Length: 449
Image (cartoon, rainbow, N blue to C red; front, side, top):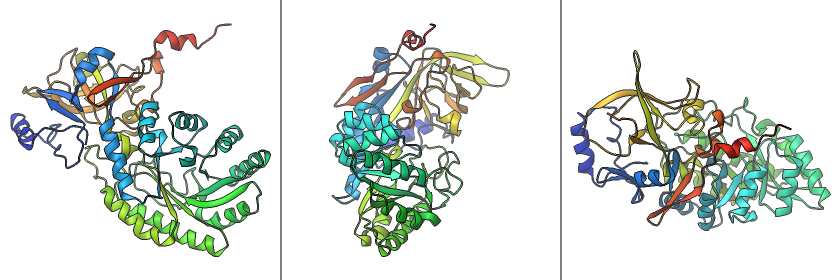
C-alpha cells in the first residue's frame, strides 16, 4: 500500500467525482496497515507529512523517496512473527542504500548479500557479521576470503565447484567456513519467469537429488563446517502453496541429513513474499499466514529459522517522483513524457511490470487516457500504456508507486543519464541519502590516453 486517504469518505468522494471508472487510480486504497506512508493532504501528495512537491523543489526530479516509518513497520511485522532466536536477514539486493541499511541494522536486521560489494555495504552500515548470510552463484575467492575474515554467519553454497573453492580459501586462512547448501527443489513458484529461482532449469542451487552426495562431500572437507539447509524459490510470490512445498522439502531433507550424521541447526527458507502492485494480479498472502505455515512445518525440527525478506520490507515504502517534460499528441496515442526513464526504474521494461502512477497535486478534472513514457531512446522506455490520469501539463509532477524495491539498485547511466537522488523521510523531515551524480562526473571516469 503506497497511497492512502485520511478517511474512507475521501475515497468515495473521489470515485464519485471521476465517475467510478475501474481504472481510477485511488479507488482501491483503503488500507488496514498501521502505516500508510503516502497520503494526500490538502490535495498535495505527502510522504509521512512531508510534501513531495517541496522535496522536488529542493532536490529536483527525478528522485526516489522512502518512508522510514513504513520500513520500520514492515520489518517489525516480520520480527514479531518469528522467534527471538530466528534471524531476519534483509535481502540487500532489494534496496542497498546505506541509510536504509543503517535503519534496518538499528532494528536488529541481518543481511542476505549476493556480492562482496553488498557485504561491504552491510558491514559499513553496522549490520554485525554474525547476522550476515552470503548467497549467490558466483562467489569469487577474494569475496570468500573477505567474508571469512569478517566472520559472517553463513555461506549459502550453490554448487559443488563453489564448495571446493570455499574449502581451499578457508584452509588457506586456517579456518572453517560455516555452510548451508542452497537446494534447488524444482518447485514452480508461479511467478514471472525472470524472477523464479527454484526450478530445475534455473541456475540457482544444488539439485535436490544430489543433496545427500553434496553434504557428504562437504563433511569430508577440512575447511567446511556444515550447519544448515537453504532454499529460495523466487520473488514476488502471491500464493502460499509453493512456500509449503519448499518448507516440506526443508523438513524432509533435514531429517534425511540428520539420519546420515549431519548436524543441521539452521533452516534458511529464503524470501520471496510479494507485495500488492495493484496491477490486477493476485494479492500476496498475509505475513501472519506465511509465518504460521513456516512454523507449523519447521518448528518441530528444533532449528533456527532464517528468512530473507527484501521487496516486502521496502517495496511499498518508496516512490519515484518525476516531472512531465512534454505532452505529445500522437496520431493514435497521447504521450505523457516524463523526466524519469527506464535507466532509473527498469522493472516495467525488464519484467513488463506495472506500477501505479499518481499526480502530486490531486484535481477534480476529467481523466484522459495516455501512455506514460520516459526520455530514453528505446521504445521499451514506457512506464504505462492506456493509463487514465487527470489532464496534466508540462511541469506537473507524478509519483510512480511501489518503487522502494528494485528501483534505485537496478538503475544505470544509460544515455549518460546520472543516477538520481534518494531521499529518506523520517521524523517529519526528508534528507538526501544519495546525491545526484553529475554527467561530468560520469564522463570523468573515462580516459582518452
